[in-house]
Length: 361
Ligand SMILES: *Cc1c(COP(=O)(O)O)cnc(C)c1O
Ligand code: SF4
Image 1: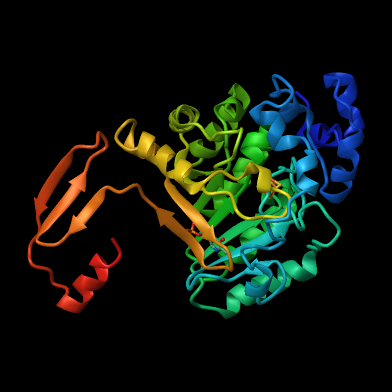
Image 2: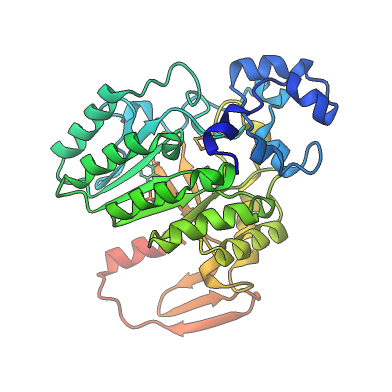
């Protein structure tokens, strides 16, 4: 079997390379790939069944990327919430620590499209040390999320150094890794890698499957290896036009994830990222997708649907209208649309708080 490093080296990085294989005209795509880097490794490329399919759309540059007048470079205001470079401290008890600027594929819809794979994203031993020092100096940080780029594109040694430094900090209770490697380059999940990871528990991994066709024998094996060493696996999906904006596709994805021991965690409404406007769906469509999951398939397979608020407000969950009214009687709608009532005991809340909750309906 080819090593992951070799597969990465054999990636397609120029639109011209698509011509021989797919017969498409690369000229309009050249400018796109100059602005936002392209990298499609042979494994992910092999999942494409036809031009324009959901795998293609995620990997291959599109002209629309240059004609986006709606979205923003940094909609989540990450740069302004970074006390040191490449570390986002938005929530009270946890931080997002960007430890690698590279990815195994450059997803066309990426939230950090402004910087991943480009020269502006500099991560070296200096910036990593500054991040670790910041975490060490803040006892309130009990959860560190390694992200990027893709942390699993680091070499084993560099990755282990980061994990070891973080584990030496007493107040860091859990470490999470956000990675798309099990999806786009599952060959990277080597036995040597899992032998390292298993030493740094409690360690969680959130991966990023967006379409049922991404679940293959190879990606299932990679997830199995991680699960076998006791790493709980979650999945974050981005809702995207033409990729997974269909309740049947999403349901199949969630069911297949459970079958490879990955628990669906979030469905994200697409962020307002410059160059990705063509992927965005309406929020109504997202709510209908969640409605088509809850009750209709295993509750384990129903992730939270969230909008990561523009301006850095964090993730805000959205639910269909199951709670119809809240008072002495709670009026509820089930997944089939039938109405039920629940007699509500007098609240421990005072009246003021109760009306505040009601005001949210
Ligand atoms: C998503 C995110 C987190 C983690 O959020 P959870 O809801 O705890 O998974 C933390 N920090 C930042 C900046 C994030 O964007
Ligand atoms: S792997 Fe993640 S960080 Fe990298 S391009 Fe894809 S979405 Fe962006």
